[in-house]
Image (cartoon, rainbow, N blue to C red; front, side):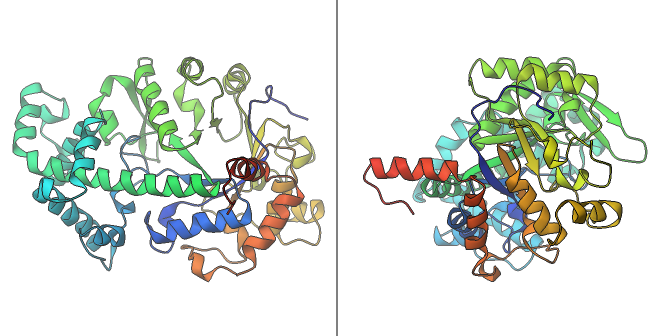
Length: 433
């Protein structure tokens, strides 16, 4: 058995990996709330939302601090007297922007404006993001900006802030909406016993806000035929410590990937943050093969190993991702949610069928994940259904799915967090949901 490190305080639990972008509405609105209720009914402890920040066209994060404006739900804004439902993606973003402009123009006359003012005071990254977003609307990608703006000339930045002051306020209001709706969802999760697991991606867009505002913290690398990305430089400690703090304020558990991108600074970063929070709610993830440096990192910082069942089969009995090698201080994924290529084909499927006979591949992965000795099992939402889905509509789920999943979660003792919450509620005189 491959045990990387002593166990930290991770309960035995299960989670489902599904981006809110892939729910029927693709936002943080009613469909997201319905999914939280589904998870509660099934006894699922974690909603793994992946990353919820803005992305460039290649999928790399533009910012690890801002939230994706596309996640803002217009129906919720309409109930607050801001905006109305839109038909398509372009119309949706235009509607969010119009709602933000309305809030800014109403000022103290709108009930949400006081909250917006408070939000602006408490976010040190917000001004930089708003200026970046406004400049991107006016100038396009960073690489096409005037040199003085690209290199952050003080006079050029001051001039841009003066010229784009109104647009910056609108982008700040959009972030306020996203933050407000996310926090409403978090409160619902708290009330129902569902915690949130979020990805913090260490490879950022070289055309993004974070790289533009703190260029000394990053090195831009080229993967040849693949797109360029920005990774932490030797001086990137301060940025990533702030990013860790923000991520752990946004969600209760963070998956950091890929750890190798943080280079030698990763151990120092985690140790520094552990001085603030003794038990690190952090899952460091890297695709195989591991380098000696990656193994040393996991052992040194005493954080979980990560294994993936789609990578386990078709390679022989010694492969470390196979369930009989899982240690307790491990997170098992049925498959990595960011992978979109077909997984059920060839030698891997033959091996899986021999390992778990009489079960279709997806059902076999779910059951093996839940059976594993690993303290946390993360089920990719696609593995809950026979067909691959682009969008997931909770209203269309099989009515018995939550009950069946809940029975398996309880069978393999992955409802520890649910039991703890129910006991706490009984002690406080409240009725568990």
